[in-house]
Image (tube, rainbow, N blue to C red; front, side, top):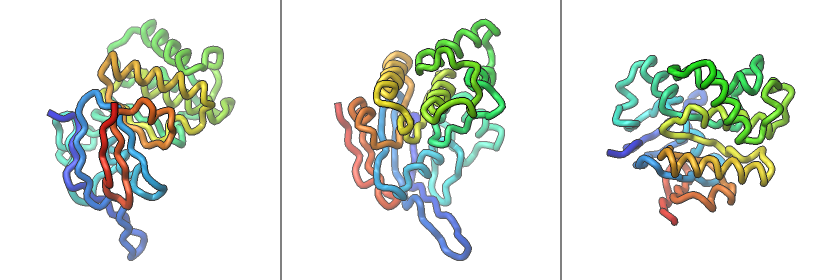
Length: 229
């Protein structure tokens, strides 16, 4: 049974009286443990597709099934629970909580899933921040961090709860090449050891090097879907 399945998914946005199609009929199946990239020119629908997969938006037409559940049949509460327990998000805009420190932003993600002691929560958050290169900056708030450092906090927050699937929109865009390489290797490790599924929207050749599936999106349609190594 696939982890994710999209059938004839369309998304049309209304701008006044004008209809703007972002997705024109997407058919896509993703198995558990895939390490895939979605790429294509600006405006091709990459971010919209990630939002659909992540239950942040709903299709105008078509059906999405995630982890054996039809998204259209879930209540708002069930959708929130699905996002909380099964999906890790890495946004270009970071979406950090500004009044919380880097440690607290990551810690908060662990608390949402519960079942860990205070000691375990602290150790897990600190370890993840160290792995993304933020040791010594745990107590800084987002306003005291550079763009690259904010991105690293966002990555740590997404990975720390060990979700079934991680959706990443240009996750290395604000990172230097050395940090990006370390972060990607950590993601590959999660993919290999935990079976975490990763779907990236990116053109970063460093990510492309490790990807095993390449989905090319153009004008809201999949123009090619190739598997690599």
